[in-house]
Length: 202
Ligand SMILES: [Zn+2]
Ligand SMILES: [Zn+2]
Ligand SMILES: [Zn+2]
Image 1 (cartoon, rainbow, N blue to C red):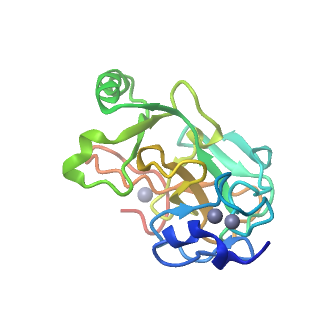
Image 2: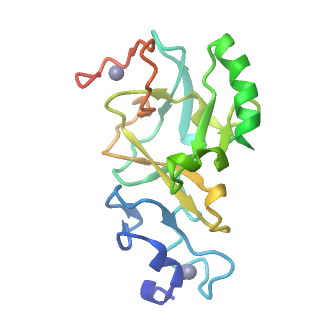
Image 3: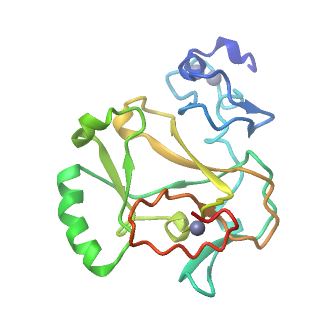
């Protein structure tokens, strides 16, 4: 195999095939649709970057930051465009998320990730949320930065059902070892006091 044009999944990629040598080369692509068990190709197909990636959570470490609680750093250098990890959590509906957020707000806990890629905002009630308070991976401990080194991109492997989009994190630039990994949460809460320390801090 190896003929990416032969894979029908690639046609879902709105802006063309976004990888080169296994690295993401553009982030304005909407979502990533990888080949899966319904495709005729095998695991060597180049459109299986995320599922075949060899970046592993064990290269990431939770550590205590000086001023923002726990954070996550990488123990190995990461090349620009590499898949780093995905956001893992419990998939809940908007009613459950509303009920839980009352409690989370009181405890000042970070709550959800809305799975809203591809949904009109006026149909927002149909979206699902990923709650990482009970079930999670290391990404739960990643802090916000206004100049984040990771970018968030939805992706699909076994299902193309928009509601069950998965959330991937990719390196936006080369990241040296022992650097903290950060995400731009696009926090809208005016009471949020940002401590990211970036010169681009909003
Ligand atoms: Zn394929
Ligand atoms: Zn395919
Ligand atoms: Zn900031």
